[in-house]
Length: 184
Image (cartoon, rainbow, N blue to C red; front, side, top):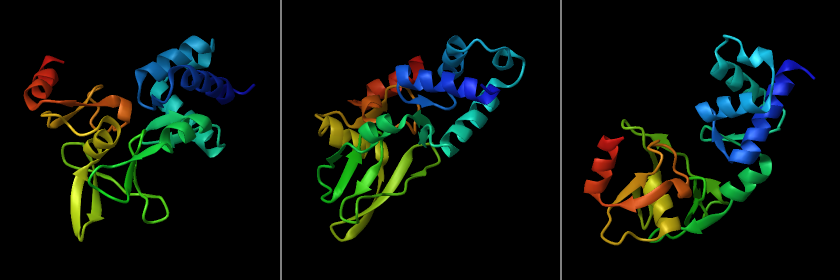
């Protein structure tokens, strides 16, 4: 077995046991080291660079899929990213569990998102005769956790601003959200 194949095998084991893992996550590197006993990977080289190169090779060979900086096996991607719900108040638009906004009116296409200056993902949606900009996290939270009850702010549980997966979002009041940010 080649060096990269050994490390790729370890990465696949991590993704299958831990779930979708960020490519920049130290968990990915440390857990991969646990799965493989390979001196090449424990040497003084920059491990994150090695992991990123191997992940790119795995994507090219269709062993894994990359979406929003996270590594998925094909079945995980289909299960998480294609399950969607309607967004209340925005007919024709749906939010997936992994944080994509889908235009159901236009052949189920993903709406392109961009990052604002603060690092949050945003989309522009045309609805009811007007264009509006929305934070992706707010739309996903509306679709998967319902409308907020006097809680106006979406909180990213892991504090990563562009991680808009439904399980990473919750409604929180503004004061608690600010306190939580400063207590970390």
